[in-house]
Length: 279
Ligand SMILES: Nc1ncnc2c1ncn2[C@@H]1O[C@H](COP(=O)(O)OP(=O)(O)OP(=O)(O)O)[C@@H](O)[C@H]1O
Image 1: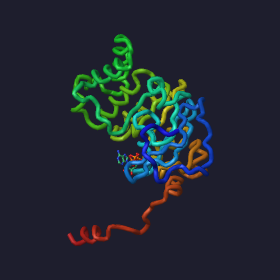
Image 2: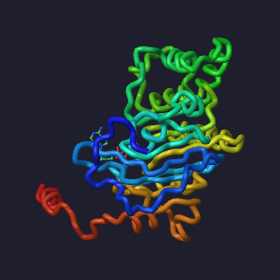
Image 3: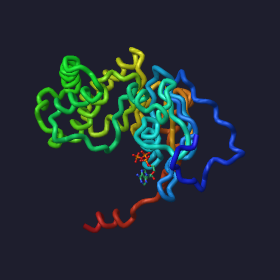
């Protein structure tokens, strides 16, 4: 589907391109033929993916692979040049309100209302979702406890550390009990104990029928935590499936390096070594 106002792409889908399978309404997320260009840079080039309902889905790829751009288009934060995104059968771009009701999103690098305290921010997220005050108050307390933020509930978010900010943003994404959580780098800067607590929360959520999509650079974590994975590089999907299918007997990290390439064997910063030897 061509969206209104989409600029013409130089490397656009050709008339010979094979017809895309229709979106899968049974999937938690169903992406078809997503493209996004920023100026001359094609950030996402024809990404199609189905995230099965009830899966814990990792999206991995090198820096600049197009992960954030893809997840932003999948969740209604960024309009694709081409392509469609569906959440449990609801098109994100033709019915954004219905799609977003089902989504909890932890975006990467989007500013929060950080002049609120942690407790206020989570409360605000719940009220914005149209929830009643009593439920919001109850869930805010539960989330502050789960994220180990009780002692800092009345601290302004602007004064939170990077990890605390990540946790309060995650709590805000969960308060309306969405069917699908899309989390961009949820463990970045989070301490190991908090990360383990968050993993437990996410596993319990999946066990109860929710779907989690996480982007991450930490292959070991994705291999241990996720049921499915997509490897993205250069704006394309290089491999996708269950973690065992994708890694094919190797560690996910080794498979990732095989797929993506880019190891710089024997190359080094010779001037850096000579500098330390001479000092
Ligand atoms: N708003 C923007 N304007 C211009 N270029 C952009 C913009 N957003 C992303 N890009 C470019 O698109 C490409 C994909 O970026 P994206 O942030 O999606 O990658 P990523 O896989 O999430 O990377 P990382 O792992 O480093 O966070 C990069 O080359 C990036 O420079």
